[in-house]
Length: 176
Image (tube, rainbow, N blue to C red):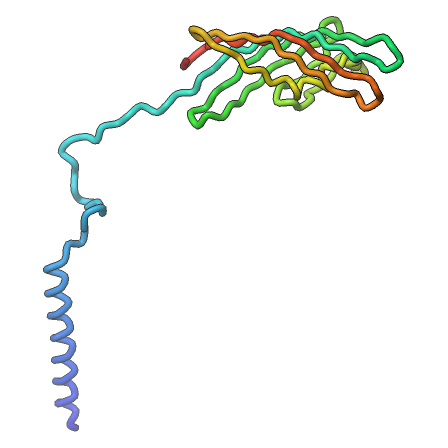
């Protein structure tokens, strides 16, 4: 086949393909329903709902704990805790509080992670640290305020027991 015939056939094939592509493009919507046209500008603004806000609660807890020894007698301690709890829009909670041992100055960060002890070498012989994880009262609320008495008891591992009884109060600070 002569060269000029091959070129003419190929140019014809390319022309038909280009024409078919132009026809399809002219009759196709590049932004079907559900795909936003980047050049389009809405004439009315979309309604927005405000993002849910965090709730912040002030926490106060007064705990009397003791370690009942299996040989008789007990060691007692008194703790005062204050801090805050934040309820996030997804329902989870986070917060921080300082628990001070009355008369000895020990402290922990609620979340049940020991933050430190002061003075160095002091001990909680009454059992507050051993029982705080077991305190989980249901606290009723009225008008942004709630309170409950919480109690916990658990074995000390040596025939004795740790006992904790305290009052917990929560007051709404913001967003409630």
